[in-house]
Image 1 (cartoon, rainbow, N blue to C red):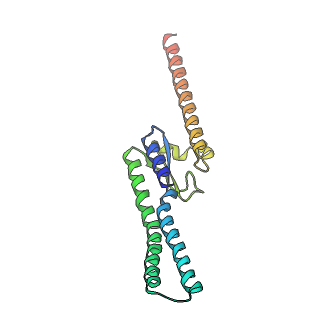
Image 2 (image 1 turned 30 degrees about the vertical axis):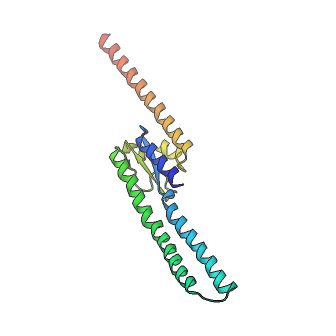
Image 3 (image 1 turned 180 degrees about the vertical axis):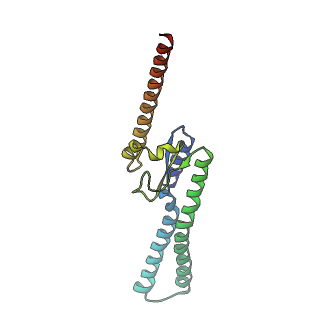
Length: 171
């Protein structure tokens, strides 16, 4: 999960896309894995020694402290690690020429996703807001397609105005 998110972010930032999404959802993975694994082992250890053997051994006491420390470390890694990894991707996007959209403009229903754009006008584009609701790959492709069509329309309009101006100057 972490490597997939890492790869997706690296590819998005390296792309020439006018709009990317930085998700912090995958950054919780390492902490969740450490915390859940050690919490499950702690539960099994507790169950074995308290319920089955009904005794406390020095091994049990030592293992209980170590696993409880790992469970707490998992919680710490989950939140602090998430902040560090998200900050890393935000600085990479900033260095690549992207700017963050203000909160609640695009993807207002997604707490763990931030939209970054090359042109801040896109943050307030109603068509982009209509297309982009969940931040999926298909929505990103539709946004890119929409922006390409919009650019072609602008180029055609400029060409038409240029030809019209030439006709007025010549006539």
